[in-house]
Each structure stands twice: as structure tokens, then as C-alpha cells.
Amino acid sequence: MSSESKTRVVIIGGGISGLATAYFLLNMAKDAGNKIDLSLLEKENRPGGKFIARMEQGYTVEGGPNGFLDSKPWTLDLVRSLGMENTLLPSNDSARKRFIFSRGKLVRLPESVPSFIKSPLISIPGKARFLGELTARPTPPGADTTVAEFGRRRLGQEAVDRILDPMVSGIFAGDPDKMSLRASFPRIAELEEKYGGLFKALVALAAERKRAKRRGDVVVSSSGPAGPGGVLTSFKGSISDLTDRLAAELGERVRFTSTASRITFDNGSYTITASDQTYHADAVILAVPAYEAAGLLENISPKASELIGQIPYSPMAVVGLGYSESRLGSVPDGFGYLIPGVEERRILGALWTSSIFPGQRAPEGKVLLRVMVGGARDRETPGLPDDKLMDTVLSELHHTMGLSAEPEFSTSFRWERAIPLYTLNHLDRLTEAENSLAEGIFLAGNAYRGVGINDCVRESEKTALKVLEALL
Ligand SMILES: Cc1cc2nc3c(=O)[nH]c(=O)nc-3n(C[C@H](O)[C@H](O)[C@H](O)COP(=O)(O)OP(=O)(O)OC[C@H]3O[C@@H](n4cnc5c(N)ncnc54)[C@H](O)[C@@H]3O)c2cc1C
Image 1 (cartoon, rainbow, N blue to C red):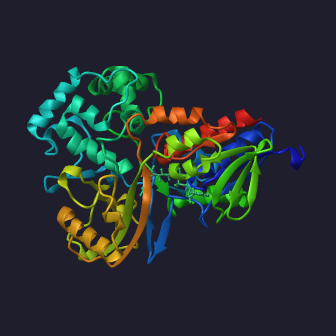
Image 2: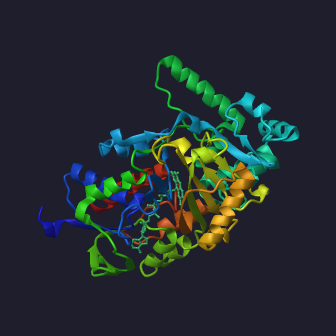
Image 3: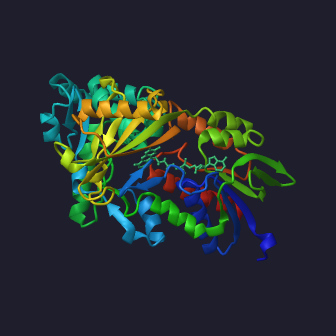
């Protein structure tokens, strides 16, 4: 095939979604015996988007994700395809210990029914309310509900305040009163629909696992109603090893410091105006945040642009703090903690990074914490000037962890629009938007069907397949 007859594809956005889509598309096209002329435009001078890490004074501080769960296959399959298995870094076993700051102290998140019964996280009346789950009214078939409404109906207000609220802030930095259950936690919505309730789902899934074990099948711990299963996994260098590697595979197809500003359709193909040059393409994949995609779609798909432009984002700051172990009363042991909104604190929680990945993210004898600030309900704190942000974070760590030592190292990352929020009926609006996209235009990225790395990789593969089917 001559280079003139190659199908031209432009991907806009070089985060995990854009990079993975490019990688999958090239591999699928190769397997199908087709050639694609692909360019990936990334406005920054580095790949990765939210995948970012700073190596300073022996610390490795990630400003976005710190890992993915190995209970889902998508990221691991990609890692295997890239031949990167030997760079994987599973988290320490003690990272299973997760805490909630509740009623003035850190309480371990229970992992089993007996530990839940003994846990002070939920009061005795609150625990008794859980029994109402067995007879709770189900969500009407096909209807959406907010995470908070679902939780109140099935488990009671206390469960919403003390368990669901921190779960929503841990993943989306979002507000459970606004978030769509079907879009944000599809597995939970699916379990309710399939089994009629969460306890019924727990029992049925446990029985299924038992049967599978008896048959000798390999049983992978997967997410159930009690939360996501699996081991948090990263890479020896940092999470950015994955996006760096994808970018290296794509080579010169990745155009850095190339900001796309406009897409038009002329003479049967798309013209993409970017800061470095003008590109022409038969298909364009938008792997940028929704507000950027909305701007780029204005000329070619105004309805989709309007719908996608409504997706809100939560702002966040991530503050990395390094301490000498000898200056701390006790060394944090576990994953870290989240703070429910009802506690009215000014941080979302803290990750005990050097305990999650011992010996990998902080020098010997040092402790690294990553403090999460902001979210849908606190748009102010992440925008504070550096000194005020630091004062706030240190005073909150003192209040919540009893930590009074001064850090010997600090660094911060700010995301004005960190994570997309899937609000009520998000999936209906998304379907309408996708149906009104011009032919040859595709969406990828975390704004649509999951914000986790696994979700982004899964959706990238699906998008690549759709593009291939449409073009070849
Ligand atoms: C603080 C934080 C912590 C997180 N922790 C976890 C975690 O531990 N585990 C997990 O699974 N997930 C986590 N997530 C979520 C996950 O990191 C993201 O959902 C995912 O990285 C998003 O990838 P993306 O490629 O869809 O978008 P992005 O990473 O936002 O990539 C979009 C890219 O598009 C580029 N771009 C934008 N506009 C243009 C333009 N006009 N022209 C060219 N390029 C453009 C941007 O520069 C960027 O590189 C976290 C997110 C944040 C913010």
C-alpha cells in the first residue's frame, strides 16, 4: 500500500487514553494487514496527562494516579503486550489497611462482616439499619439514581455519610448527592439489578466463587458490593513508566507542544488546526478532557459539543510531604485515610505512600505522604497560594493524624479540573452525544465511562476497535 493510500488518523490528547488508543489502533490495523498514518497531538512537552511524577531529593511524588487494581484485566494485559511485566510494582500487603477519619479519629475500614459488626465506624442503630437492605425498594429498571439516594434507600443515611461519601471522594473527589450511580459505580447498579440487593449479591457471588473453586477454576478476586477487590499495582519507577513506554512505542507519531484548537470538515476530510501545523485526517479521536472536546466539536458536532460541555470537573491539589522517620512518633502503616464530608475538614484525605510502596517512593528512613485537597465540595482550598495551602494541609494533618512534625520536603501539584463528575443521567446524555457525533469523530478519555486507569484502557481498546471497523 502506498503512503498516499494510508488511512489518516489524528488523536488529540496524550494521556493514558490517547496513548493507549493509538497503541491498540496501530496493533489492530497491523494484525488486519492495514496501514494507518497516525499522529497524536499533545499540548504539553511530555506524555501522560494526569500521569505525572517528580523525582526530588530521593522522593518520587506522583501528582495524579499512584496505581491501578490488578483485579481487572485491561491494564495488566496492556502491560504484558508492552513486555513490561518485570517493571510492575505491587503494593505492600499492609496497604489493605484503609482508614476513615470519623468522629475525631482514624477508624480502620472493616473488610469482613465480623470486623464490620465490631467497628465503631457505624453506630449500633446505623448497623441495625443495614438489615433494611434486604427489603429495600429496588431502583426502577433502567432508571438512574444518585449514589446518596441509593445508599440512603438501601443502607441508611449513616452508611452514606461514613462509607459511600469517602468512597466517592476517594475515586472522583465528588459529591454523592450529585453523582450518578449507574455511571459512577456501574458494578453496584448491575449487582442490584441482577440480584435484587447488595446482601443478596454478596451471598450469590460467594456461592459462585465456591462453586468455581470446587470445579478447580482460577478465582480472581473482583469487585463486589463490599468494594473493589485486587491489589493496587504500579511500576518500579513511577506510574508514568506506562505512559512513557507507550509514547516511546509510538515514537515520532507523538507531536509534543501541539495544541489542537479547531476542527473543520472540508472536501471529505477533517482539518485540524494545531499550534505546530495543520493536520488532515479521515478520522479524529478526541482523547482530551470533556471541556476541551466540547470546544473542538463546536463546528462539526454542535449537539455533542453542548452535551459534553456540561460534564463538570472537581478541582484538586495533591501535596507531597517528606518526613524523617526519626521525627515522627509512629510511622504510618497502611494505605492512608479518607475524610467524610460530614467531618467538615479541609483535606479529602492522605495516602501513606511510603507504606504502600515501601523502599520505592521515599529514601531509606524517610516517610512520604500525599495529601489530597479540594473536590466538588471545596473549590477554594486547592487554589490557595502555596504558603496558605501548606499551612492548611499541615494543620489538617495535625488534626486528623496527630502529626505535628515539620516536613523536610514538600511539593505540590494543582489540577484546576482534576476529575470529571458523572452526574445524574450522565449515560443518557452521553448516548445522545455519541449519536450526534459527525462520522469519523470518536471520543476517548476518562470523561465518559470510568475514571480509573483500568476503565481508560478498556475504553481505549473499544474506541480503537470502533475506529478500525469504521475506517477499514
Ligand atoms: C489526583 C488524581 C489521582 C488519581 N488517582 C488515580 C489512581 O490512583 N488510580 C486510578 O486508576 N486512577 C486515578 N486517577 C484517575 C486517572 O488518573 C485519570 O482518569 C486518567 O489518567 C485520565 O487519563 P486521560 O488520558 O483520559 O486524560 P488526561 O490524563 O487528562 O489526558 C488528556 C491529555 O490531553 C491533552 N490535551 C488537552 N487539551 C489538548 C489540546 N487542545 N490539544 C492537544 N492536547 C490536549 C492534555 O495535556 C493531556 O495530556 C487520578 C486522577 C487524579 C487527578
